[in-house]
Image (cartoon, rainbow, N blue to C red; front, side):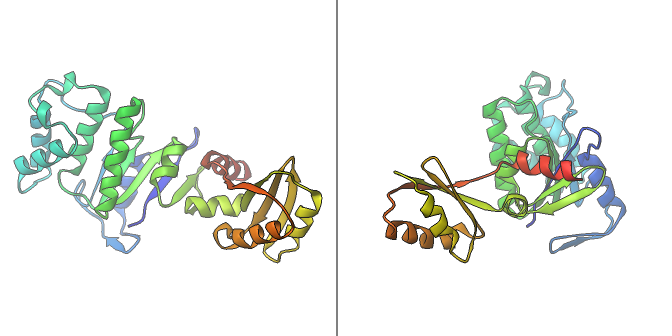
Length: 270
């Protein structure tokens, strides 16, 4: 399964509904799954930022209405399944209008999944939710991921995108770039590892800089900052070289750029 996230700019909002309409009109290949143009709402479904529930009706009746609209074979069974999965079963008879924003968002997610769509578009699924509700929604998205669904997450929440998504797509009037978060970081900034030393000496940077896989090595205070391609494979060689030169290594960490850094750099260069 492949995940994508569209990162929006203020002057070019890429909404879940816009993406969904593109897929409805055309035959589109996603990962290894090929879908021809589909009737609305069957092969795919969108969760928009505003749930749009019937506030005066119970949570259960809200879902039953949509289950029948989607021609679900076992409406009551599917409704119960997702109400239980999302922790709403005990509130199933309560009016949707009495729910908190987080509970309404979970109910809207349940509605989007009633007919088991292969592709799901989520538009700002945790927008304006409190931390606990946002965590519940994220955990549920992870569970959907395990089921092998293709999920498009449209969001400005870059930390959430970094945690949830396998692949990142950046838009500004058009697609700028698409790849895994780590590859995007590497493409812009490379891999930088910080070796914290008891006492750093300038000749240590010279020593490490002579290794064939090191692009740059420099000291800052008692830290040795090294740019390289594959830290997991190459760090041990650097450690051996430093220890052999008498360095006392306190600990090693990777200098990791945020996804915000990545996003801003691509948009700036566009």
